[in-house]
Image (cartoon, protein in one colour):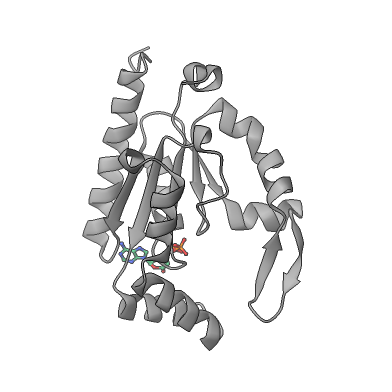
Amino acid sequence: MDIEEKTRQFPNILITGTPGTGKSTHAQLLAEQSSVPLRHINVGELVKEKGLHEGYDEEWQAYTVDEDKLLDELEPVASEGGIILDWHTCDVFPERWIDLVVVLRCDHTQLWDRLEKRNYPLKKIQENNEAEIMQTILDEARESYSQEIVIELKSETTEDLESNVERLVQWVKAWRRDHGCNDEG
Ligand SMILES: Nc1ncnc2c1ncn2[C@@H]1O[C@H](COP(=O)(O)OP(=O)(O)O)[C@@H](O)[C@H]1O
């Protein structure tokens, strides 16, 4: 455990998964329902807002992220703790920042419908659909972080969403207890 980790009062959670699996929906609800303040950071939006990219890729309709700039931008808030990082890329963050990695999963036909509703180009829908079938992001998460902090959660129904968020709310409380933080005061 390094010094930075010891001084954090709030955990950092990474919510990842193929686009459309429900990251933003989960992150937003968790930030609302948590009994301690957690800040939802939609990394894709942050990249766009702060210009943390090397331009827009028309073919993929996505920004090419400048990872160094992104990490510099996030370092102070990550060190402070209490952030929910919401992004489909999970292998760029330093391990010391992250206390829990949540990988959301969704049946691929359902995912296809969700992405179609977003008017993604067919190529992008196919690519993401295939990534979900191949569990690409789950594998990346398991390769990038220690096994004990990576959890896979199903995100297909509203019931899934509610029970996942409740579980995460409880996890945050337990993390704080384990780290000697007093939630009463
Ligand atoms: N567990 C779920 N049950 C029902 N609909 C969901 C669930 N998770 C996400 N959705 C829906 O799927 C769409 C994509 O969700 P979103 O949170 O934007 O995904 P992501 O941030 O992973 O791209 C939204 O319309 C959202 O309402």
